[in-house]
Image 1: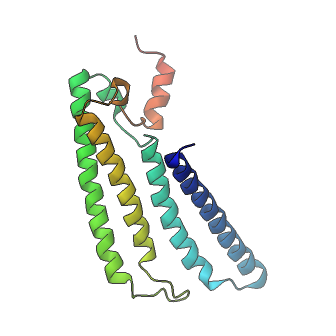
Image 2: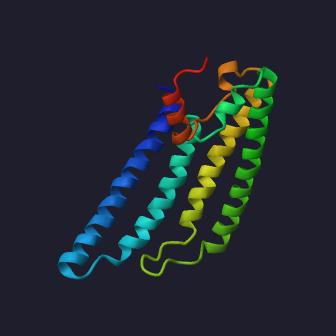
Image 3: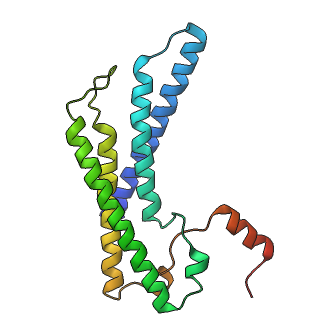
Length: 179
């Protein structure tokens, strides 16, 4: 397993640990409120911060595997030039949006680094750091994909990326294979 594989494994492991911690915190808090009529005050703040990191980390991993929703049925019907153009436009627009997320997250980090959460005292910049870190990873994926596309190193089967929504793929399965 190469360095990239180890990095992905590390991210997956961190997300699993975060999910376990969040579930344990929320479950323990619910039980304590039900049984003892009190709870751990910090559990809500910490679980909310973990949830933000899980969301952005998951978005990065799904993008890495090409699993985000896409209009694959439309793009697949285009010729090679149309597929290439659509992939390039999608990557460029995604990169633009991700740059906006990175810039916005950075601004919020700067604004909130000295603001503290009321119970834990943790910097309120922590959730914005998740957006910043994931944004950097997503931007790197977009740039690498654009570079492969523009240099002609992208295979034809990589031009259509993404998955259809469950409703569309379910309808296609009921109809049977395309003629």
